[in-house]
Length: 81
Image (tube, rainbow, N blue to C red; front, top):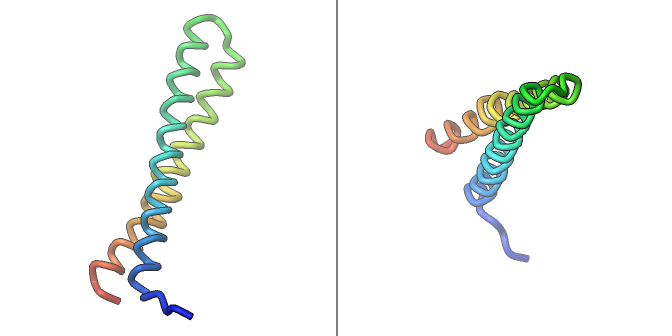
């Protein structure tokens, strides 16, 4: 069986978390834009829902995955632990 270095595993995990954070943030931005256009078009319920979901997606992408997951992993890799 081939032994995978721990650094390679950390890099793959960092890449996955970073891609996930970017995808969640992108979905959040799209939902925010859709919500604002729905509200300006007169559909307040759909617009409010989309804005709320967009805020949640932005929070998950930026804070949950980016700040709380990716940044500590990056610092751990940079320090060599």
